[in-house]
Image (cartoon, rainbow over all chains, first blue to last red; front, side, top):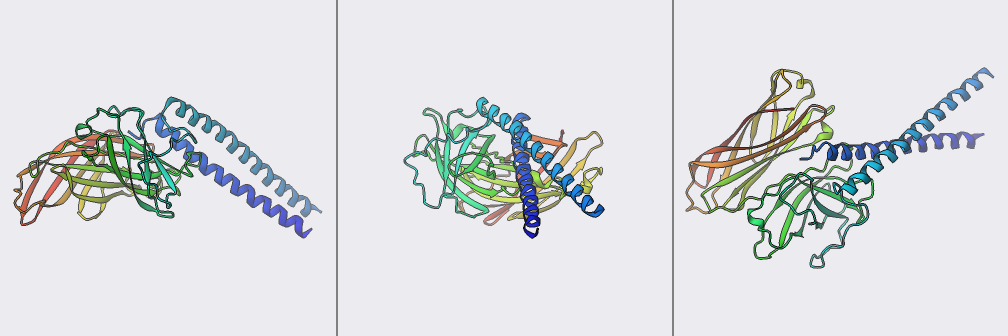
Amino acid sequence: MRYRKLIGIGALVAGLLALIILGLTDLRLYVIVHAVRHDVLG
Amino acid sequence: MVNVMRKRLVYACLALIMAMGLGLEVHMHQYLSADVQTLIRQGSLPPYGRIPAPPAHLHTKSSVTGNGYLIPLPKDTGLDANWSGWITEIPPGDQVASVSGSFRIPHGLKPAVRHFSQLALWVGTGGSFRAPYVLLQSTLNLYVNEQVAGLIPVRANLEDCSSNAACLAHLRTSLLPPVSPGAVATIHMQFVPVVGQASWLGFWMNTRLIVRQGGHVADSAIGRMYLPPWAADQNSVETIVEARGNPVTGSVTALPNGHWHVSIDWHVTLRRPWPTTAWPAAHLVHVVATGWYPRKNYITHLKTISLHFSATGETGRGIVSYNDEVKP
């Protein structure tokens, strides 16, 4: 029972981390795509 | 029993929300990756993992942790699309690194009279450009070494923006023709926006002032202009300017029509290259201002104004007045 709880919390934290990392990566990709497409670098 | 059921329901909802979030993220990732691939095919971005080996004549030190690749942006007309370069000597763990290297330019170009602008510097880790990118905000000065035909040494100060999701690798540089010493000084004022800090901290712009005299960099200063967020909608905004080296003062006024009125007085101290060099009464000044304020403004200007000097002794002081209306 104790391990089940631990596993649950671990999964929750791992999921959140994955969400954050993916989100930040996508935000960066979005900025690059936006910058090049809308020519904001020039 | 009811409590247990309620707990399970909460957990189930959490798991569902997380699964939906992950699904959405994965979808977005695929969508954006496809966009990036399209840009690569169009030649707007360097290809993933297909970086050419650095030229053999470049001595690559063991401390290299990143490789630089210079690409011309599509609008740039002063560069051959095929040229590329490598930047070496990025010390590991450095937030601000000095890098140097060189890149080959096509044979037959006359670099001394070329005006290079709109270069983007993309720096990846491990010799590839696979996501996540490590974008380094940078300023890059190009110095022409005429003794080595076809090679331009590159010196750059890189500021690591990898922790800043909204930071863009932005680079604007100019290569100006050499002039006779003391005759004309060209000032290249450069605004490099730190985009990621604009949303809630205010509007920051790093500024760089490069004074060239006689084809050499006579002086340079880095300043920072700050526009607080609460001032964005006011009619009159006073900027707080910090500068390393030379003091910078100025103001930004948001006009009712959405334009911005930028006025900057940059006090410049010039050292005389040689004691016998006479100070000219006025210098030609090229001002390049580029800024990006998310969702609001995009500034790009090239302006030539004059700098009036009053010189005493070994140094001269001048004021650069930049006064212009900037369209969003």
